[in-house]
Length: 254
Image (cartoon, rainbow, N blue to C red):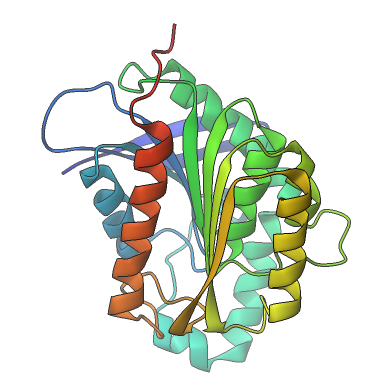
């Protein structure tokens, strides 16, 4: 599996991103943009990018925490047990990845993919995890001419009373949407799930919103304290099914 590191210029500076390409065959390939979870860029997310790329996609995994400065992602067990560490991490890094900031960053990510010779089409797919789940859905709403498939796995706060809640973007979404929540997830309770479903239905968005039995918030990355192998594998199956149905075959760029 090929992984390269690129530097992307954004409105607020520059960030590093990993680009994954399939082992077999030659490009161009359909593109997938991955929005990270709250613990930042680390080997478990490289593994995730590689798995998606194995399905025949060029995958872009950018670092959304660059505004906070260099970092080393905290260990999952320590992070889950240490509330002071979580507080400091949230204030220094997670707080910099606001929806407005990431929307601006996404413009840079999409520009990179548009200029990349190995990308087959301007139409792309997105996926996100935890905090990235809402960012993936927001990308579909903010960039409906580019995002034609959007997924969220154990995403939190997808349908809240906040004025920038992702579900409010449903009328703008043209993408096919897949959302998987955990059976144990205080950040995405049944009330939010139903509100999201209602918003997508009313907007006429093709969608599926599911709850994974036995899964807890954060189950996908292999280094998670609540990693669930069966549910994580189901995630790959549903994600690649979504992308295969929407991004393959894709029209040429020009």
